[in-house]
Image (tube, rainbow, N blue to C red; front, top):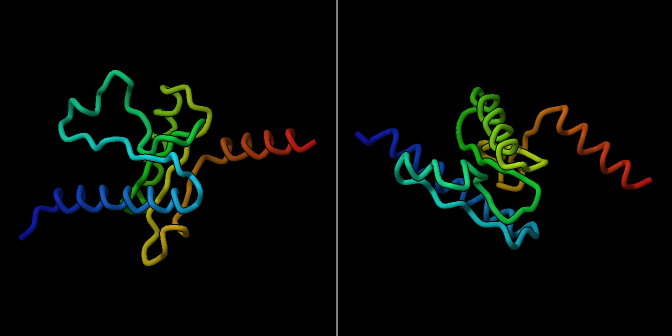
Length: 125
């Protein structure tokens, strides 16, 4: 019998790598993964909790390989990390079963989405 926690960690790490490769293919060449914490104390570094994917200016991105019922909690967490880091944008990249990585979901709150769209529309006029 395998250790479920080890399987979950393995899946999460490899899912982050898949998303990183997809972001790089989409043109985010500076994107990189934040080092995976191997101890609990590693998660509490001097620079704070931080983003899962670095190199995309103005964005805090977390990658979530878990089930849909946990998306709300994970989205709340990435928004809190963005607030702590002073990052204007936060999003959760969420797993989508049996779909290519480019078709996975990017989730954000409705109010955040509205702010983003309004700022783009204001810049266009």
